[in-house]
Length: 309
Image 1 (cartoon, rainbow, N blue to C red):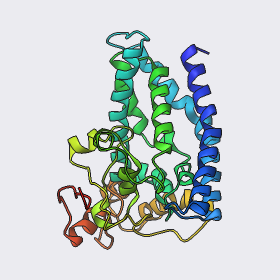
Image 2 (spheres, rainbow, N blue to C red; image 1 turned 180 degrees about the vertical axis):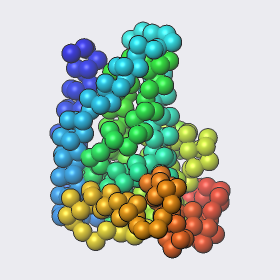
Image 3 (cartoon, rainbow, N blue to C red; image 1 turned 120 degrees about the vertical axis):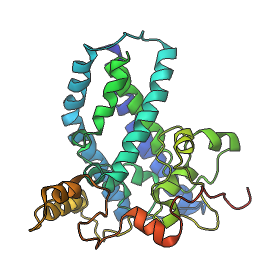
Image 4 (tube, one colour; image 1 turned 45 degrees about the horizontal axis):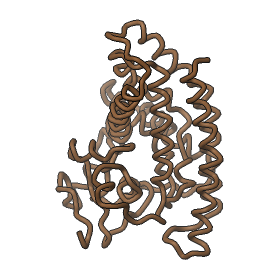
């Protein structure tokens, strides 16, 4: 095991007790210090269970992505050194890779079937950050890591940067922090920005895909600021009324199978039930996020400005 691999594993394992400590602090702050947020032990329990299960299942399947990156390494254009400057460059480019992955996961039903798990809670808390899918190595978006290896980054450095990004994002899932300093809000993803991403309000749909740097959303036109007069309403446009973690995990995959098996469809229509945006239907009987935004008059609207700014 290389030094980089050891550091990656240790960083991930060390983060777990920090996550649970932060969750406990948030619960105490909401309960006793009257900080903004909500309490629901059952919902938190489901999120934590799904998070721990994701560590086991995704960890077991991680060899698929690692093997792909190690295979790609033999075709590198150059071999970049293991220096701090290269690590920073890798982190920034991997953050762009995460933005692309996240945007695809909301606009293509197959990866959405994995990512929908993270959006299934009607609350927003640090525990919800742990509510992760169990099939991330099977969505196809892990291929987005390959170009980073081809241009010279070590595969384990790419994986390490992804782990750091995930650790940072955990702390975005809270209502107890209102706003960070203006300069920070302008550059980095923050709890305020990420609350928008979890909102099902029409104007907040398909916004703020960023991992660490919010600049990608501003650059590609997917940024929206949180409106203090219209707080995010969390969850899915059609919420799941269940605390069963296995149903939460499987429901979208089951839906895909049922749709693909519908009688009388063409091959193209069956493929679109897998690859088209969530909400697409062959007969127009369902609503996609674009349909919902269009009906609300917020399709392609400019990013909102919070009250008081």
